[in-house]
Length: 312
Image 1 (cartoon, rainbow, N blue to C red):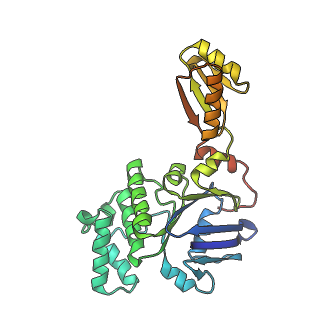
Image 2 (image 1 turned 90 degrees about the vertical axis):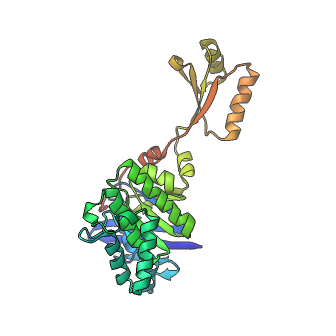
């Protein structure tokens, strides 16, 4: 089932077109990453789907509820973590969580139970009585995400959640995010400019450019769409390299490393065909590696021509 289903979402601010009719279908209990350059419309998409602003056109369901007619039901089903941690620095970690429990109108005993559970889950129990102003950036982001979970949302919007974090803190947050999906069946819509983050976390990725979705698929599917895949063969000596080069007309030589680069998609069928040709020519390769474009290549290729009249 789809946790989020949107069709033809449009949004303009004045004369600036921000979203130009995008469609989304996000399965339950999955991580869906939305990539795009600054101004592509990522944050606007999150704001519309989380009921913070209204779309100019199109329709959507979030958590099975109509975004326009059942906005209150949508809000009860979701949690939102923005680009900057929304914790109160003057309150302790525990007090921040209890404040969220009060805002959700939870009974006092239930609020304390959820706070204790979340402090333990996010490894913040030892810091429960410390004010958030003393926390590192990574700890503040963990507390921010824990606060989002007080209301037990089925769907969470994470808008660039690891911006400004060091690599260790970023990976810790990644583990927590995957745990929410795998252990609790939560659906996550993630916007990010860290391509490694999308590669590590997302079950599916959509690339937004100029207010339109220009590609969607798994990380591997998107990488295969970009030219540049090749097989790299290394040989023991120059004689073997020359013999292999004579077999493959389209290959490029790397004499310094005794290597040959052969265009190919890296599928088993392609690898098998290359090895069969080498065997037929009685040429022995020392090693074979498959090189494919990464998400950086995907991102740059799909967003290299920005559209006009698109806002941030």
